[in-house]
Length: 311
Image 1 (tube, rainbow, N blue to C red):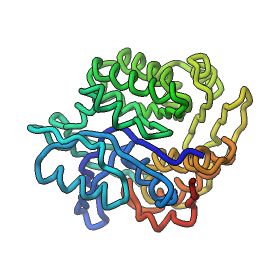
Image 2 (cartoon, one colour):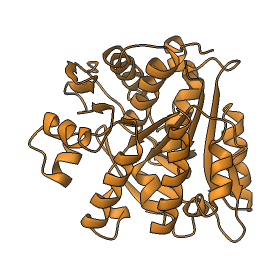
Image 3 (cartoon, helix red, strand yellow):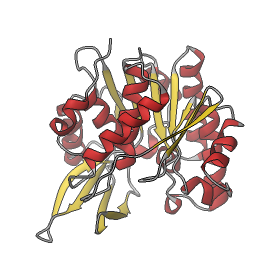
Image 4 (cartoon, rainbow, N blue to C red):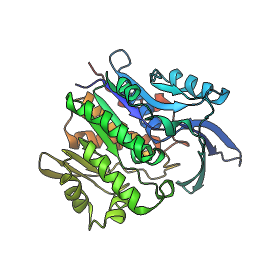
């Protein structure tokens, strides 16, 4: 089973609210969150989890790299880019639901695909390459093409390419550009992890089955249509199945729920050899733990009992 993962995207400074009204500073970001939970759920002796991004050469970037490596995530593919720094976002909570305010104009991660040979080298030793719609949104159109060429090489040698569209309209110049780029993201993928109704709103899908039909037509082999607390649609091998979500009576913070679900799914499916439906159940278990604590990244020990070996 696959045991070498690369997550491609942007890690940012996170300001998360505390009950006192103050904010806690941390580091997070959708693809980094997934890498964090992959690392938490995989046997460290036999599994590689690599993060592919860009950071600056300033002290805050130094601290971010120490944070990534301190979590056991391989930072060898983190590019240091002069005259750039890392982005920042602030979480606002309304009950357990969250919204974000971003500051990322000078983010070095925007240049993570600026050199194709460097990106190819970063992905040369992995079985699974994971990216998101936010990854695509922060890149220029030229750099998106570079990313897609590198992902095609992963597929060509038999690797898996996993895409979560994670739609964030504010990151795109317009709806049409976002829709076109996300379609290319699906075309690059072997596994897709969309969220309903986000995709339905963008593309006019009637329901989750319509979303799966549209993505299947783009050549994706395995599709998991997430729907929060509602059942998840599994489309694999030409068959559909529905998997109920884990019930959480009192969620604390839903930040990172989808990212941790993705990690739980990928660990069970690609490192644990589980069926897609079984892997969805594992993803729900992981996410249910995460939303019972504050912040995108909870202590790895809180999901340690859900870990799976690889190798």
